Length: 154
Image (cartoon, rainbow, N blue to C red):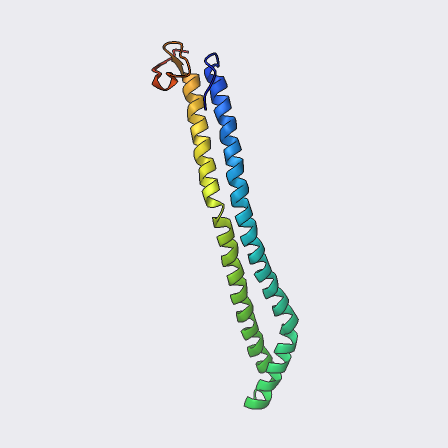
């Protein structure tokens, strides 16, 4: 970004910081849309797993448990217990798929998070440099990249 020659160092840094935050916000909004899309998909699968598990569990447990009782001469309680265990395994698998999809949705924000952390480190280092150093001569906007700094004794 080009700065007016009369701008102070702090004004230039403040302008650059504002530009950086604007770019960071744009990156967050783009990555946020992707994360939202993935989170909705994960939420649908998670809700589907819960609805199917709860809606069919009672009928399935009773029906298959009674079938096991009749076919294998098991007690009714043993048949119901085996059927309930199978139902919970299936619900766990569906829940695991939902959890994996939630993890993928949060991974899409990882780049934004690392970019933001890098930007914060840059801002901190620039502000620290401004507070601890001073330019050896007055600069115009064309030669500000060739600045030599010296430590202040303050």
